[in-house]
Length: 195
Image 1 (cartoon, rainbow, N blue to C red):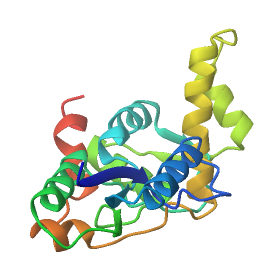
Image 2: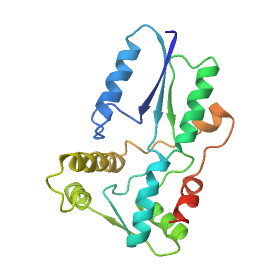
Image 3: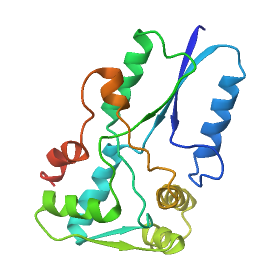
């Protein structure tokens, strides 16, 4: 094995509250100590994962969230794949850590405005405390441990946004692939308008 390219997450070091952060950080540390060539791609939250949130918010007229006033530059998975491919086939990336993000950072109010525009109806952003946000996802399925884990995972990303760990907004996609990063609007529009 000559070169490992690892897809990590933004700012994975403690005390980032995202559930996946500790495992990403431990893997990064293991690679750094391994003696082999490595590149770390710290992907932002995926734009594609905003599709269910957008469709639900449009249907309900409200975006329930626990992001506070924090921001995230949601990145298209296609862009993450393009960056990884470019790093694989070109030299000079050994030992580099890249934040791979979308081209624009969004707060919850920005997302609500975008969802409203795409859906053609008003969407209000409504902030909740973490426990209340988890409860809205779990609903009456209180005995479903898998659902609760998923809800707590989503809430941990919201808290991570709120506390500033997801605020990175870079030109990595354009710089490494030679093409602009895909805007969140472009990822959402074809799917949301069909809903």
